[in-house]
Image (cartoon, rainbow, N blue to C red; front, top):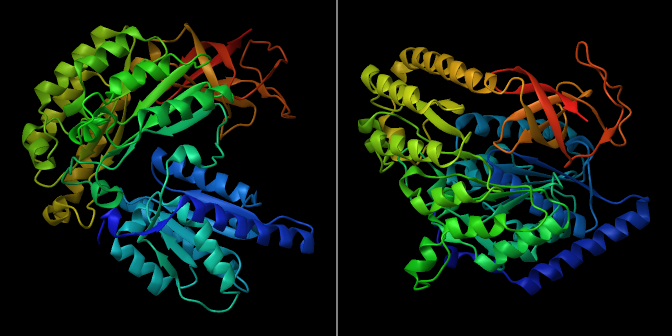
Length: 502
């Protein structure tokens, strides 16, 4: 598939506004006729970059007169934002898409799909052939094409129609000119760059998101500043490799283009901000300049996500990661010494093609030295279109699974030990909201990105407050985005339990 943006059809700023107005007229007319505004439902798969794109899509829907629906069953428009990184995301997406067929009547709901999977012809063809009731398809991140897709779909009426393929279209302009509806008002996801130049042999992202393109420093800072003015306590800077921010600008002659370290420092100085986070950092580009910023700036999170993937130099070369285990461990030592209590999390792939038991043992050795506070662990999943997919040997499945269980068991020991060291301490926690498992429990994140659960009631909530053993709680209400002090009573592998200190 041709990923050259210059070959794509283009939605101009004026065209985008005109198409939004056309859809708004339709939604206003529907509201007058039926007494209700049309509704939308967006389901997101994958990374936080996709979350960000979905927030922009939601903002566009809201400006066009739509209201959010609680489920696809009652929505007038359903939009799926897809992820192509792992096979389980593909399968979940197709399962949800298939569930829409029984509820679709008379051309409603209108169904759209965008995201990384739509940059691969195999998935585009699958939708056209097996899910012909999908109305339109957009490319990854191309939310500016959404109003045009709706205009075209609405003009076709409710009769049988072919899937409108708009994967070769894109829109001009920067994210700061787009409306955004943040899922968490106290947390702002801010894209600093798109694409990736690394071409790790297992990764599909460079083929779906394209080459690295850095946003203008002024645009990023402006978006972050406005988010904080609107109440955001946390900024999350997003990029496939944030450490390479600005490299493309400097290659084009902007010799004074800010580095990621400079951008991170300047955003951390915004008044009213509690913490600035970022992901993901590639070890080959983690600079001493960035480590110095982490050391000096208190609002920069006391946490870094630094994907290792493998501790074997031979496997790292086959992965095309362009660092070795010794360099990675040197970075870990620098990070541990630059800031007391910094947490280091990572990604680990087990069963990469040609991995031997010796390679796996080398990964365990690096883990023993690094003592990761947490890790996202994965069985290797071949992605069509990547070099490593041709090397995959499914006959090793049982061996790989046994290694995976050993790795997870060891990491769980490390994670639990890291969390247990905090028992008895009082930590500041940024409240996210109710726990997914228990409405009487609130959850939030510490400055070093640990998940904390504690009893409490959100403002406006009627849930009864549940006390921990031997404790009596004040009935004070808490808002999402509040920063509260929590005494840690119990450590778990992936979270901390505590009581609020009033």
